[in-house]
Image (cartoon, rainbow, N blue to C red; front, side, top):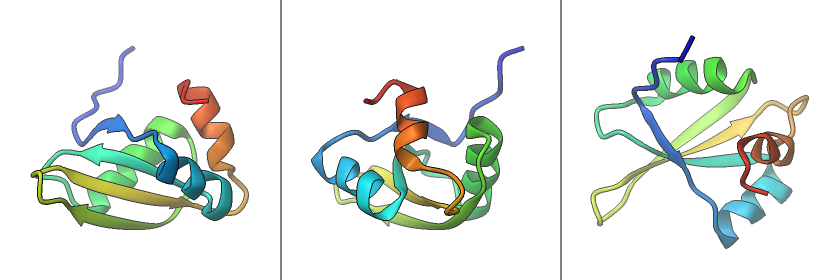
Length: 87
């Protein structure tokens, strides 16, 4: 059965995102404009099967909304990125 994904549009992968994964145990996502922290947290936990410690939202000038998700210490962002095919 395919999961209904509404709020997480894609995963960001770049130099800064990789550094956040390695050093701070964080993942970066492009999210929909009508999302909020609660909706993103619920969808990310269901989709990735992890527990989330905190979420920061960035509204960029190019009209994209970015969510930086910090995982709880028992989950490794690099392992999740590998599962997603980023690394």
